[in-house]
Length: 138
Image (cartoon, rainbow, N blue to C red):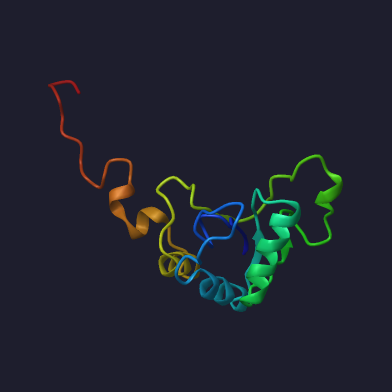
């Protein structure tokens, strides 16, 4: 699976342009995903020096990405006016609807092909409950 992973607020706490503390189990989970054969893309708003700092931070912890802000490693995003939207199977981002689950849950979802609704029925549109009729027609 090709997985795009945000940096600030997802791998580390929000402290941009500095690098915040690691969110518990983020890098361990990412290393497990890589060992499981998934290709990870670092997908972040960071660029230039701050991007390199994020890449280096991850590399120091044993997380090396398949690509950075691009669909594949050979793509030269430096020559483009803006980073393209990456095409992948899954995005892991703290700005998801419903927020960011803990990294253990994320790993479980990916490995067992679970949806957010599967692990938390309260997130279903009806809250997991049947709607009561309001009147004789509706």
